[in-house]
Image (cartoon, rainbow, N blue to C red; front, side, top):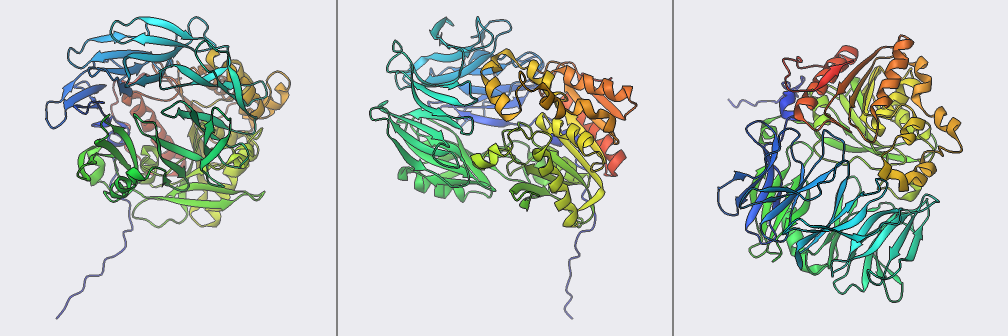
Length: 633
């Protein structure tokens, strides 16, 4: 007698995933090869669980800790070309006044290359032909603009290099390691592409992008006769172009009618453009240089998911390749171009590999005025995607977009039993300028309608319980949560706002001084602070908080330079005055978001409890959380 086993569909959620796994530090992350290929650096926590830079000799297991950060942890670093130094960035408790520190891999000696109090360093360029020099932008002595300085990596000397006339927001360096092109913000909310024949020559304008267009410089060619740029002029979406500097003629290298150029791979020494990606539902690569075609074909077969070449040695024999998937950790491989073989280095969070994680599905829906909105839907593992409590998770920016791949917030919410929808509402980038410009002057209006249409779509599909939908997000997403509870108070059961602005007038009045060149762009896309304060007031949730019916949780960093503490404090005060339900958590040592894992774990513990209370999802008890700076106010 033959027995057959019929597998029954799972009808219950998998076990609770501890928040520590989802929001704690990675085990190892962001590896980078040294230019000579001898060393591998990466980020990992020390014995006190503070992220540091570590290094090992390639082919050996002699891993050692290089840095000794005391509190905040290091997240950004890169190799120099002198063979013995790394540069890492650090600010003070989230104030974004970054300093660039050099650490010697042989002696562990650390030097502050930009030791100026209250000044923000912006790393600009390193070059293999100039291994002992580093170009950096510093808003010294004028906080409203970053001039270019040249740092000697041998002795730390800092010399003035190029003056910013006041409106330049980015610089491009030629093969002689000289600043030769720049992007300048203009009074109409657009940008100029500037160029000069030599460091002594005057700047000339090669192209103007209006406020409706986007554009930037990518790189000079090896002979400095061509400037590769990306721009949306004369097209709907941003195209990759070659600008001949002698004739001023532009040639299209790569384009898509609907999607903007996303990433460009440039050869590290000969400056040849090798590949370009367009981010549709997922990232898709287009090969420009046939010499790497076989390599990319092999790399694409190593494992599922999206891949990116994140590091390569100067000999171009060894690459580091990062693989991103939606239901597991980030995997890092070395790829040997000679043998066409890949070797797994490590994943950033091995504990994720054993867990039942949810998949992220690209979706689209029509808006009430006929646009098509794209996004990503994640539903819980093990139960039917029907009549679920739901989180509308709104991205920040707003001039960015959500992408496919592992997201700890999404996995956390899905594991707790919620459907999660991430929406690339109008004004999000990547979908061409018509879609981007459809968001102009639409904060709290059509941009918000897109979110409400998303909720309606979820309900029509039978996925969401209309009585149990919450709205949550950070930065612009925090604003969207406030707008949701004020402008459409009947739609959402609760809201979670992380560092979101409540008043567009005070937001604009308190932006960092070095955002001064972007004021015209803000005026065009948000509204003009000088001439139409009433319009900005009409789109500010603060002035409508008497409409709030549902509970709100707010998280704020005390040192946030973008969305000041006052943005949260004023709406909390107004809500309490009118006896509206609000919980407020302030983190004394954070800025625009929560960098320290102790603070992340505290905030998400509180948010989890809050959402469970009002939507009915599962939650892990808050427990005994130590080391955080959160205060309930």
